[in-house]
Image (cartoon, rainbow, N blue to C red; front, side):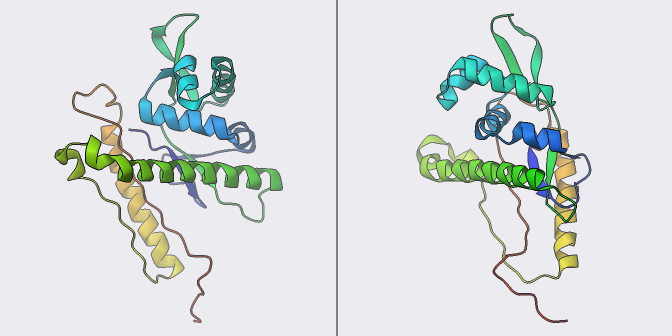
Length: 205
């Protein structure tokens, strides 16, 4: 399990907020796609990634090296050769901080782009699940699947309480880390979003 990415004003425990240099390094659609694929597929080579994203292995190799420079990915120790290296995500998640008055414009734009690309990747996975699950997955996998949205009126403090409850639950999920070779396991994604709707209005006090 990898607690991949989060967008938050206050980073949950165990998640490192990305600094300006890391934001700049990650703010590229192909690099986000590579990071997302390594989360879903496990370790891959530059050639394997190239086939999945429709790019040359030279291109994916370059972007892997840039991601490695900023500790997003690392070479798999003891696997592969000098010509065919295997790469994996560095364990642990990270947070893209929501911009505030102290955030410079470049970091703000980079953070927004990163969060948007990850959210687009999540949406694509849900759509693929809806399109293909009935014909490609067994009933035992379908029984545990949930796609749920809860809409309600909350104060800012109550919304933070909900988010804190998720952070606590997220921490308990770490007992499932490192199960890429577990018999019967397959990649699974867990989504949770809590945010104020921008087009809504706050009730007067």
